[in-house]
Length: 499
Image 1 (cartoon, rainbow, N blue to C red):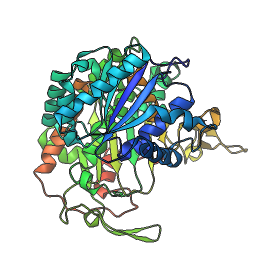
Image 2 (image 1 turned 45 degrees about the horizontal axis):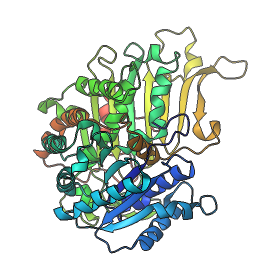
Image 3 (image 1 turned 180 degrees about the horizontal axis):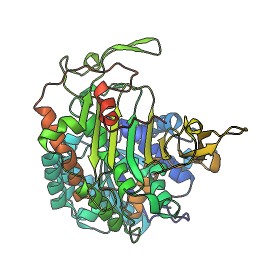
């Protein structure tokens, strides 16, 4: 996590595999540029883009400047800032399948070590397609410099495996090449300021922690909804689906933040130990239970905002009879002392009515109230809503008397908003995570056992769905998903919260 003071990391060389790709253009370089403006980057740093495209250093810098101007939270930095930042960027055309080409990386590091007169940290960021990761990691592992556990790190983007078996294989491969403390498995949701704030909300406020348990909480909901469809990602999404793409990683990580016990310190392994405890405590789903606790859906053709919208099966790169889900909802239980029998409802989907990621904690209703019935027609249970994006806020709903001579009770809200409370801009998730990699703080990154524990939660659902032919499409674009998703919570006497 970003320190309270502008303490800079030591000298760093950052190699970005897939340097000419979309992730670097949209996220990585804009994040690095903002860190540079805020004086968080090391005084001596070098960023090297690696790829097959025939860029020169100058043309590569021009391309990245276009990305900064389009995607950065700062479209334009202070005068001449880019001119100061750009010389640290270079490009190296490279075939990642060519084992002999990797010696150029060692040569570059050696030259910087000599130029700077110090041993730099070296970060290998694998912003590449998942199928390229094993080969690149294997070739990197053969370099003598990668044996330096103190200075060399490798960053691996999601998806981390396609299922439990492939995740275990990838963990085994990486673990044979690098020490665990060198491996940074990145989930950008954990870098979001609003996600990190969950721990502050819980453990820095005595108001909440005493009631954050099964005695007072009726249920927890976590929703990540998108209004868009595939946006040209059909090739990737066909092999993934909503359960793998969102629930196995992002939503389960948020569940861990909500459900974790208090760490005794913010040491990286202590915090991650507590998250693994939550994942291991999630009740395992038996094959015959899947139909009762998990729902999948796929959007069909229709209209959104008065415009014709293609169905998922009509999107580019998608099979005409595809069984890939674009919506998934699950009900989970965390079997431990704090959360026994409290349902956790998770849902995610594409082509839904709103773009929002939010967490709702609904508290149990008061056991008795003395108000007359006519005063309580609009009575609702208390709930706490944590807006992750795009609304970055925390809303506490409680009951209050409506002004007037009659006795009437209405739900009202107290609201904390980042936008209203702070004048400074929040750092983007990748700013936080890149800085953490450079400083060697793995708190917000997933450990091998975390990844595997998360896969164990969803594997029974994936296996059951693989054995069935779904009746797709089963929801209209712009709706909140299939009817069965509504029934998942309604049969328990609840409803999905949308704000």
